[in-house]
Image (cartoon, helix red, strand yellow):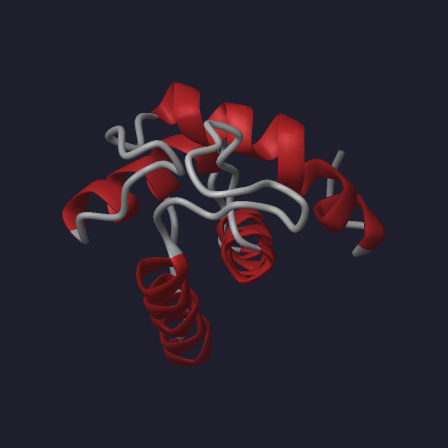
Length: 108
């Protein structure tokens, strides 16, 4: 079970606020209007990586489930507008977060 300090909980809320404000469709440079090649914004990815690390630090065995719960409760959607399920958070981790998380030496 996760037990959060007040400082970590405040940081979690801050990162979730960033995710909420930076969620949605993001087109990388070089992709024109109407492109289907949406992805997550750099800010969303960075905040999500920090959330992953916070969940690990605070005892979560499965950060993807905890993050999916948080994202769903705040209405944070995937880059293509879908509900952020644990499977989508796992994909986000494998595709975007793993390198950032590994850089911080916390997990792979």
